[in-house]
Length: 144
Image 1 (cartoon, one colour):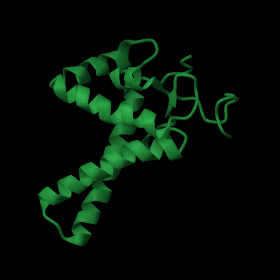
Image 2 (tube, helix red, strand yellow):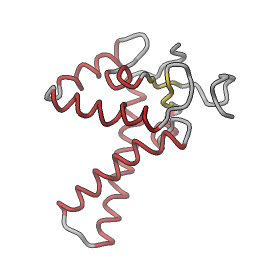
Image 3 (cartoon, one colour):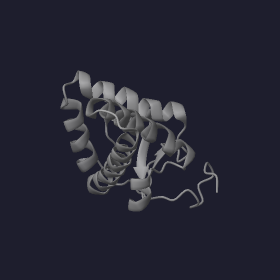
Image 4 (tube, helix red, strand yellow):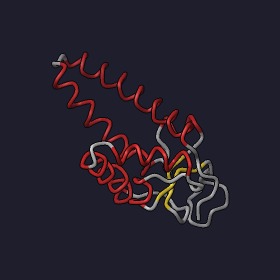
């Protein structure tokens, strides 16, 4: 059951914060170790992928951007996401968006903007949604 779903603008804001954070950290790391722009892009992409996969698993569905915006990723039953769920949400969805030449991403934007449950293709694949509900709001599936 989807409770208090987060819509398009708040999710976009969280994504922009996360992207800015990863860009700044990536720039600092690549500058400090003195590597080329191309190598830096590879490192940045790896950092972004690991950030999106691991942080929500260990931090109750939050990334830093989502935490600042007060939203988090949960499974449909309200429980915390696991590594397998995040693999589906990030990797498989990315693959779908690439093979559809970005059309899947455009469809997802409209789904998040206009569907009542605010779920995009990546949410459907992983059986997740983004919510304003905090981990400690009385859900029996949540850890306090």
